[in-house]
Length: 177
View 1 (cartoon, rainbow, N blue to C red):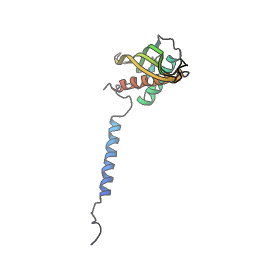
View 2: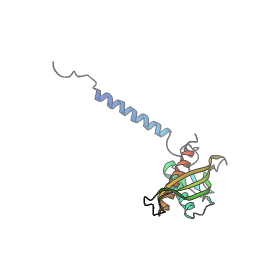
View 3: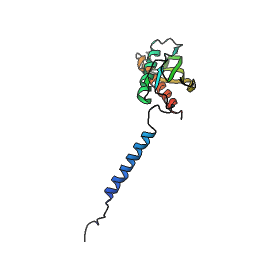
View 4: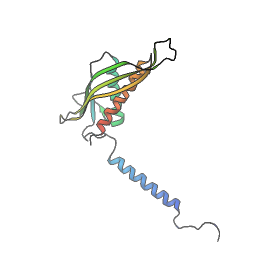
């Protein structure tokens, strides 16, 4: 008898059963530890993102940060936006610093004194408050982020910095087990 020996239950069938078990096991974990609300208490279903106090000269930053936080809390934590008096949680804070004049790279032409790349830095103080209990769920002072941009494209650098701040705030909210 030449060739391979046949087993009553082939390795393909065993592999299929193994991967099916992994799939169902993972699905059970996702159901029990779903992404809804992250590490926030289970009663937190809605959030109000209040406009941050702005102690800087950048007028657009306040709106851009609030919009990005709304999108992040909705898409990444599954929370619905609500008015402050109806929300189960409130996010508030202060924009403490906005420094947009940090040179990063300079022109190769020594006759030019202008830089080719710049960096801006944004620093905020943030807190997430449970409206039901009045308890501060997460708070951090000095959340800082940077963004690089071409000399004439400050909004691109500001967008990078805002995205990094939103990531840190959402990760902070998720870390509250």
